[in-house]
Image 1: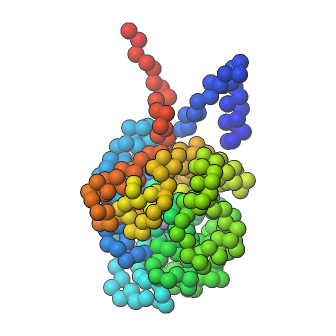
Image 2 (image 1 turned 90 degrees about the vertical axis):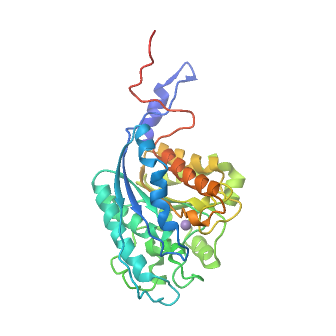
Length: 343
Ligand SMILES: [Mn+2]
């Protein structure tokens, strides 16, 4: 795919003048799955994320930019009234069960030929989303955009909240560190540490930092974003994923990756985050690879902003990030069949 595009770029260069423009990729069919689930963390409100993002016009805006988009509605989740902590871990039964359902749903929507968009909900849902995606298409690359690395195990976590642990459940390399939990027997690890790239980290626990270093995970923390700029970060990310075999990409996007001045309506905001422009650029470049196969957009929580404007800004940023994933360019777009009117 990469070399085909290179050839095309060459063909579009005439007399040294680049006529290169973004090759119009076939508009992908988008399949939206709502996951109004909040038991991976203690704060109510994050279950409102999917409907808020829909109300902001996601489906219509995707269609307006030429995407075939289908809304599969919201999943419903089993309640576990006696979900006692297992060691430190809170709501293990609810989280295990919800992710099993989500995994089946993502797998089915992938098999249906769609690029999935999972609207969370909290980030514990990445367990089911990535598992189901991998079950449908095989080996994945995961780009995890987040202030946090979410790679605690149930034993390194100090809070017991599972939204800070999903990556540990998914990685082959950490299985000996993850204890068995109720409603998790369906889950088999499906991801290698070398197929994971982080962008935006700035709040990483000691155990998490150990795992990232020990496993040699590719990390672009905010330090690297400052040092290299987002342009170089994305160039290196895409080159790295290329060396890993150009596998289908799963983009797991936590809105708290973006600076809380822009996305304050989230459960665990951390100062010093990505700008709106950095955030959008990530989606444009991932889209440009032609490999994007599934997206998570998680941790939008309207009850956590101080103002209505804070909620609006967070939700509209989440929508803009998703539009960027599916072809919206800041340079502008026009349909492939567009013909300008003649007088
Ligand atoms: Mn997260």
